[in-house]
Image (cartoon, one colour):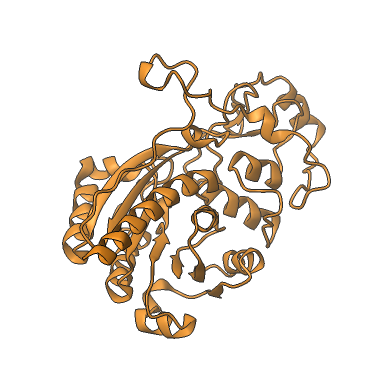
Length: 331
């Protein structure tokens, strides 16, 4: 059984479940996140409550689990994002990572996976990352592995980098997944045999009639402005990017008080992409439905880990855990 914390819209959970992990519990303090998880994961118990109020033993009793195979989650990344205010562990949201570590110790899973934004590595000159790595290693006692992965390297039609921390309770050698696709402009000879990154245009085809595909109607002034923005260009008024259909999309984001480009103007039409189109760029399957208001749906998609990226990481974790079990049978 697997446990999800800070579940959000479920992108990490979905990818890991496709890799073979059975999620029976998910937590997020936002109710509409839990509604989405409940709708798409029928056997998963959800709780919309503050993670600081969670107790490991109570979770085990709730899902009737004697053994937890995996804990997955990414504490709120806005505190660490280079696109946000660049807060740190002094930010309340940043401190929630220590409750994640606490629950690892209380639930004692065979493995855990933590994900966050690359900005975490450089925040405060890298001091916060050093502190966090120290806490993961010393407080849990797990074997720790870290890597920064680009979702476009794993079949996602979007350039989105995430930091992953994977830990194992038992000593074991672990390797993150090798890229499956390559940047066609790269001169890296090592990956020349791989297929090119998947361009955004394929994700935006045949979306009519799908759930979460409500098209926003813009006024004439906005439409005229968007029509003048070239593909791959940026609107100087609201700092949104127009998608280049021949390349993976830039990172699909939710709004930020600090501003920043958001690649969400359709490449062929003078409008924002819909929730479903954004979900396609994140590699969510069409059957996966997002609940809540339109703003809530965009937020779930924009904050999510691309499922195909999570799937690649999940497969590597699953393979490593199988190796551990074989060793247990031998000894």
